Amino acid sequence: MTEAAATLTKKDFQSDQEVRWCPGCGDYAVLSAVQQVFPDLGIPKERFVVVSGIGCSSRFPYYMNAYGFHTIHGRAPALATGLKVSRPDLEVWVATGDGDAMSIGGNHLIHTLRRNVGLKILMFNNRIYGLTKGQYSPTSERGKRTASTPLGSVDNPFNPLALALGAGATFVARAVDIFLPHLKDVLQRAHRHRGSAFVEIYQNCNIFNDRAFAYMTDKENRETAIVHVEHGKPLVFGEGKARGIRLEGLRPTVVELGDGLTADDCLVWDETDSTLAWVAAQMLPPELPTPIGVLRAVEAPTYDGLVVEQIESERERHGEGSLDELLRHGDLWTVGADGHIESAGADDEAPAG
Image 1 (cartoon, rainbow, N blue to C red):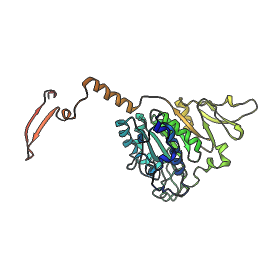
Image 2 (cartoon, helix red, strand yellow; image 1 turned 90 degrees about the horizontal axis):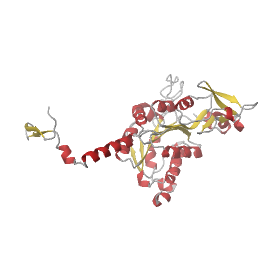
Image 3 (tube, one colour; image 1 turned 120 degrees about the vertical axis):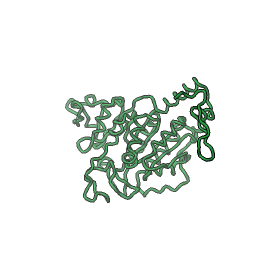
Image 4 (spheres, one colour; image 1 turned 180 degrees about the horizontal axis):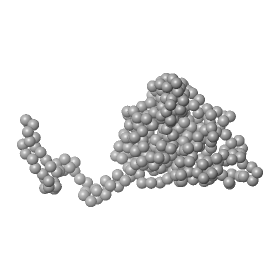
């Protein structure tokens, strides 16, 4: 850890821009969490970059006192990929929303995850289009009544965690805006992961989709509606940890502990097991508690690391190279002022034909 990085505080990452989300928006909590986590990562401030697309969450770079890009709708992963490949020393985070990432940006997201680019992708999921005033989004539940679906949506929603796992993401997690200590822990884990880290953050839009997650965030519901997935620990939940999750084949079921049944009889979480991650991604209310935490974390070669290796290998074989030589290599044409080709030929190294 450098001396400069060791002295950073939350204030160092607060920009001079007025934060202009709606009062009570869950984005404030996510912003605060990120601003608290960044100083503890031991990275100089000038190496942080935040990239966003379009949407309420995508105002994020304005409010972070760090380098950043506010790109176009859905394209944040593409621009962030180019940045990470060209500057692998940078700590590149992506702020996106369920509409930005799951709809117009869907292809960019899945291929970023497939390639395992070393980005940290925070997907704010409020199950609504907030910036454009309340249309249903790709994660809105079926039957959702909005300005664009007055009779109720007939779409089946995306499951973001399942989508990320299907794309081969090497780190997949879920957190909730108001569970600040847990959210910060997940962000720390995402940072430490070498490849693509995908974090779905349940975030309340109190204007257009208020209390979308009240079934699990209200204090009286938290014990019974949420199960924390922690590597090496059994899946137990409920008041006094009186319930657990067991598998019947590959089907998770809730059991009441007692009468000889203990936490030792419950499913022990293994974040390196891709099958378990898929099972957890399918755990949906009201039949099952909602899992939060790290569902999958495995190591694999990163796209940016492999590209750097290729470049270094070619540099060792052929030397540093020259841009001028590159431009003048191969088939060459000389075009006159009238637009006609005056001469054509090939340099000594150009292939025949």
